[in-house]
Image (cartoon, rainbow, N blue to C red; front, side):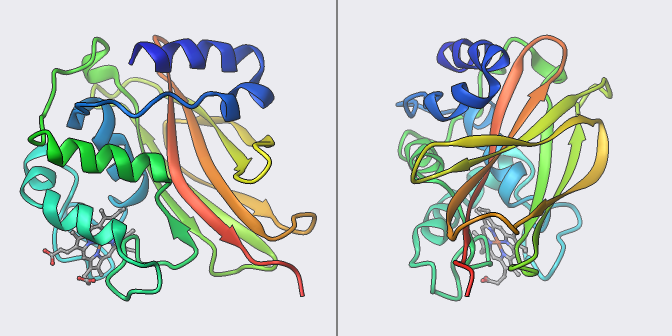
Length: 219
Ligand code: HEC
């Protein structure tokens, strides 16, 4: 948590440079509240919610549900990405290695709930949906931004090239509620790109990855 805040205040000054350099180490004993919940919300909860969507059989949007399914979660995200049981079920989008390691450490250390971070109920949440099915033209990044206490959240979306570490701001000025950002792919070479949200609740800034997307090379 301390590392996160440090990197984030740097990234406010050098938004383009700081995010790729902002690579806090994986916590030894991650907690649901601080580490796992943001990953599940950004990458899984658009389907695994209440009620579950798109044929998903379970919810993963509460601590209890995630703890009770932690074995399945670890198994599914670590499968070969060609495996039909791989999660998330879209072969172009995967969790980053760091995210997978966090979930594995969380389960291995007893799937702890908290303690809740200092900001408590003002902690922003993003439910993201990255749709690469219209590749060659554009990637649609959907988002739902909210705070449990109903307060405002502001945010921006960044794209980081996994190979070079270069990044750019895809969209700024996001606010509480839902919306869509379109990433036009005209100028991009094939490769792996991480989609990262920066969320601001007026107290802290939180960096949340919505996973790594493989963009095919132009023909
Ligand atoms: C686009 C919708 C969608 C997204 C996003 C998604 N899932 Fe799923 N998930 C499904 C569907 C559909 C099934 C049922 C088919 C199957 O078991 O493969 C499922 C099944 C599962 C199961 C097995 C549940 C059980 O008890 O049978 C787990 C565990 C799981 N998903 C974890 C995840 C995790 C972790 C993520 C995020 C990294 C994720 N899913 C993202 C749709 C989704």
